[in-house]
Length: 102
Image 1 (cartoon, rainbow, N blue to C red):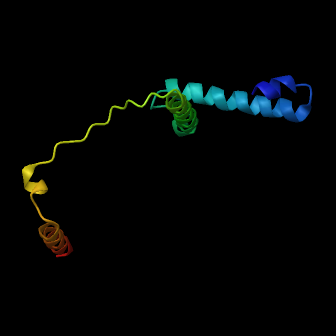
Image 2 (image 1 turned 90 degrees about the horizontal axis):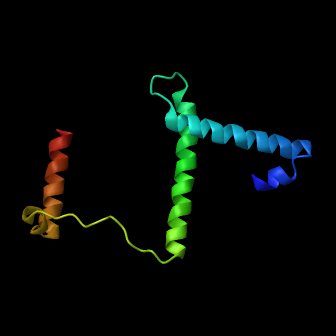
Image 3 (image 1 turned 45 degrees about the vertical axis):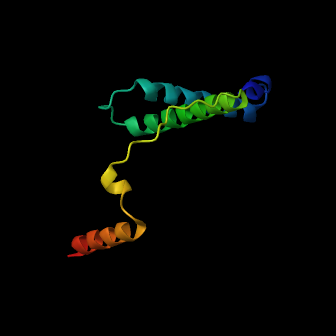
């Protein structure tokens, strides 16, 4: 966007700047829009794209900064599942598939 501002005197780059401005405007509207609006998907897609790229940028910054903390924690497993051997687990899966196919 900065390069388009520098080159705004040329028609091609002015068009690119206008397209970027329109895209970011639709993303901002997509964040604030009601679900009852008829064209909500168009606005929500651009909002999702921009927010995903922002999250990627934040994650990259954290990774480059050495921040490795996360919020994911391993879930507890019930004894019933963790006690199953591989063979028993495979037999149970086969039984489940047979029940589904009937």
